[in-house]
Length: 101
Image 1 (cartoon, rainbow, N blue to C red):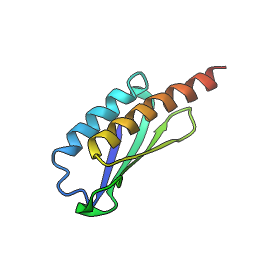
Image 2: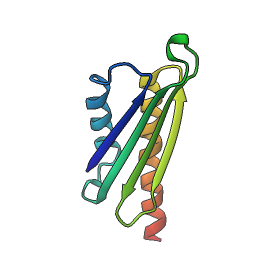
Image 3: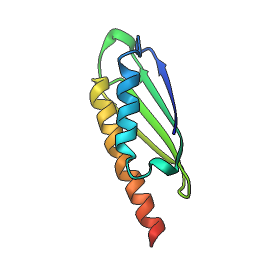
Image 4: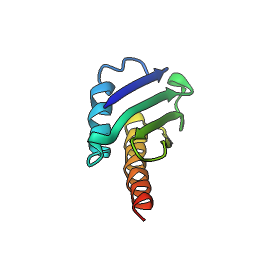
């Protein structure tokens, strides 16, 4: 599984990268062998000014399924990541279920 993480205005990603990688693997458990690429974009729109400005976008490519893209935003990057991972899990299961029909 190839995971690329792009961060804009979020400071050091040293703490975030391992968490993001672990969360992606957990969110896509059951699809491990079929996941080819995952791209994660982390962005703090307003820098240190605050507000609901932490954006997370995840695009996942799973063999045999259409590409999956999810977005989330929150005032807290950790919460935005959690919401995006939940959406990713749901979207992957939904697309796999539709394909099985």
